[in-house]
Image 1: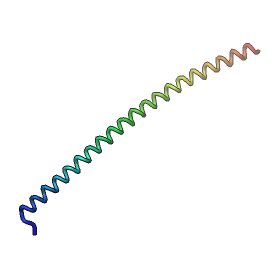
Image 2: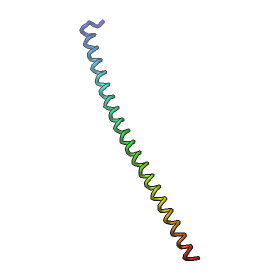
Image 3: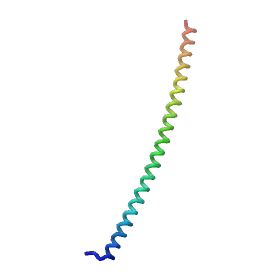
Image 4: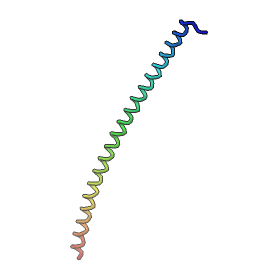
Length: 76
């Protein structure tokens, strides 16, 4: 059977181990939050780029239609 002194020492050791584990998990959570924030930024940038390309594509399509009509008028 453990003495009171041994029991206290074991409790302190267990508490220290638990605190270390908690600190490690907190650091992992912070790291995951940072990664998520980076992904959110990249996702936002991707959506912006897609909208920009759509706008440019629309303008390009409109320009092609005008050119096609102009060619048709010149040909006809």
